[in-house]
Length: 273
Ligand code: RET
Image (tube, rainbow, N blue to C red; front, side, top):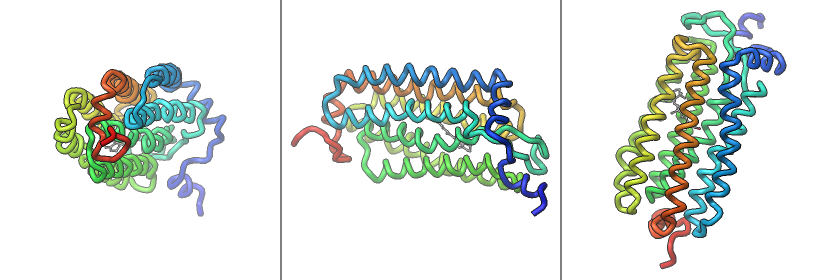
């Protein structure tokens, strides 16, 4: 196969140290990664302390799901900062950066597959939803992340990048439907509607920022540079993960009884009959 066509269909061959050099020479990009590593570390310690007093298995389940968010995050950002999950892509004809080698932090999209289901698991447990609804939200969310990763990695066709983007958005709409239509009613019945309402709003508003950023960033129409896009995601992550998780854990720690009594639908260790 001629070298040019190989380059156009795969991540370009670049050593990890070349990628690392590129990341470290871009202050905006590098700082957006290290700030999150530091924050995730602090947040993990804080959450360990906040969960110490929890007793019921249901409250502990919400706590573990919430803890996994910064744990996945610190691993994800370490992967990006080391260059392990970053590569160069040659954009296809039609793309604003066609033919150029663009730095792609593809590990970000991959690791969302592990962090976002934890956010939804914690929210679903808080709303005391049923297994079918929880399964729907989580599988649609995984679909959104994997097809989003495909949209970022496809270099054979500009059109197909946007086709994957559209598929990812369709999965996202299903997640939004569950969050906005199904779970609020469940939370009302479980007596958790106030905190659920706050967290739902935070989640929906912030999550909408991700596809917008993708479309404007170097993966999409390239209006924003790699560094600015990365700071955009890092900022959204700080709010959608750490602030979200802090609010959730603080409420669970203060209202363990409500959480325990509500926990009958999923059979995950609610109050004894
Ligand atoms: C992509 C691009 C394709 C279309 C859509 C997207 C949505 C991404 C979202 C990500 C949320 C990430 C969070 C991470 C926390 O760890 C993949 C950007 C719809 C909603 C909250």
